[in-house]
Image (cartoon, rainbow, N blue to C red; front, side, top):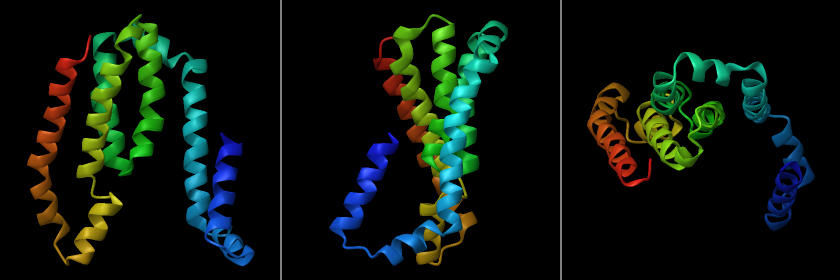
Amino acid sequence: MIVALLAAGLCVIIQNRLSPRFLLEMIGRKSVWAMLAVIASVFIFKDVMPDAGVVQDMAQAGGGFALFFAAVLLPFLVGAIAGTTFAFVGATFPLLLGLLHALGMDGQILAYLVLASFSGFTGVLISPLHICFLLTCEFFQASPSQTWRQLLIPCLCFFLTGIAVLAFLPL
């Protein structure tokens, strides 16, 4: 994956004829390092969860509630708090996949990933930290609090659409 990422970066540099100076400026930005730290922590989290036995403990202790928490509540909360899709996917999907495996529900992975995707993305959409929301409010000089209230019903409809899609997937 790292080789592919470096190759893609090299292609962007060559196609856009970017100077080495520009590349050094980008590498020196705090935001780039912060994003790399988030990505690294997601990969670490993904590996630590099964090794620490958290997934097995959740499966034994919570069963159905743990599955609901991992598929609906946790992706929604992480999406709403972080405001980015990769945060809820990286933080919750490894837990959900491990939990489904521990519960012997490998055949239902697609259905629960769809549910978690709808739930997490709903959280991202209503997050006041979502960069698209913030930039849109700034561009149109709209009040974030008034605009945010107008998002609640469409986001609820989006989540309910996810529930409806789940009804057509094999469980």
